[in-house]
Length: 149
Length: 334
Image 1 (cartoon, helix red, strand yellow):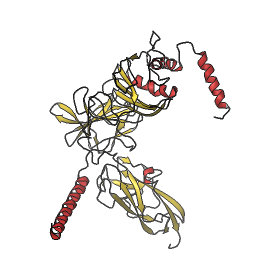
Image 2 (image 1 turned 180 degrees about the vertical axis):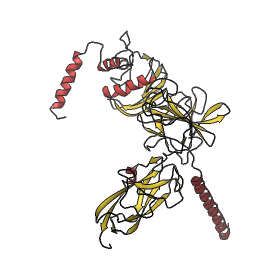
Image 3 (image 1 turned 135 degrees about the vertical axis):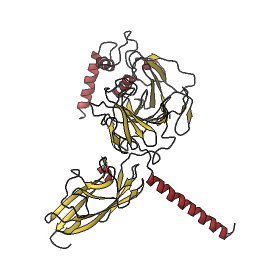
Image 4 (image 1 turned 30 degrees about the horizontal axis):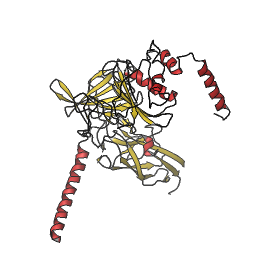
């Protein structure tokens, strides 16, 4: 891409973003339009990827959350930045993060999917190296924190 | 300690060490054990088996106990009964040991739920079974054999997928001890069931050297001798007898083409030779000696070769350094 083309493309993206209806994001739109994708939360409260994350202290800006994700308490002294659970098949939650982290400015370094777990390691836009642990079967627990063994 | 006593003890120790080394080398050559169930050496284990049955307590293959239920990269996750290897969909999956296919399921689509999805189960001469879970469906080429098929170690079992309980494309590999009607998962990592530690893919070689790394010049109608050495960096011992499974040097590009340089010592027009040694254990160097006959008219040529486990699997030719021999056929004695 040339130097002139880059600002033009960014401007086009900004215009597109401004045209989105309130409460909608590209991530949510993609998720709802995919066959077999995550269900949209009727309340709309947690259906916006990044909306829950932006309210919690210490979370990187724009961290995407699957629609319907419920926040869970974090133990005092824990290094975790956030805990959530969501009622969706694990493979869909894993696919959501593999798609939505890069789409929201996060750089994914490595992924380790398993039978009923997955780990995604990535760098946040603010430069922090983080790890998202996902466990469960039809209710998936998400734990975001620093990279750990 | 006197000088003589010390010397005697040193001699005894070195004899013992030598004996042990010979015994170990012989054991490796004589009894190959399990190898990793795929061919790509870049694949690494994401999660091993949990040897502690309690929920929330995990015991990984190194003996480390984790008092949590979080997944630990490269080690373990809670109640996991096998080893997970992330790999692209439809990657080739290998038999970890020689055996017989005793059960298959091939009807699931990608990420369709069923516990194990598509799988192959094999029975081995040591009494154990191996399982290869989450394979691609039979329609996608994930299942290649039915029950009753005998496969030698390293033969292709099927192709990976993401059927069953699967969050992303990977192979779940499991080794089972059979106790009556019970199938009990055991940890090949902790028990060091691999021929080499840690496990290696079955077939892999690295170029070492050859008799003439430049251009071979041969008079038309005459034969010269060439040899090349490869290090066995795979997990299986190379043997120069037996079929299938014999390791041989064949023509390549295209695979197994009839060579115009076939000499009298070749077993056929594509098969130049087997290893000079009867057995080349992992980490050993095998030499392959063969004739090159000036068959075609005078001119400059290139003949390319690759190693193969006969009737089983070609080696990765790139890792052989793309082995080829420039050959000049001359009208005169070089």
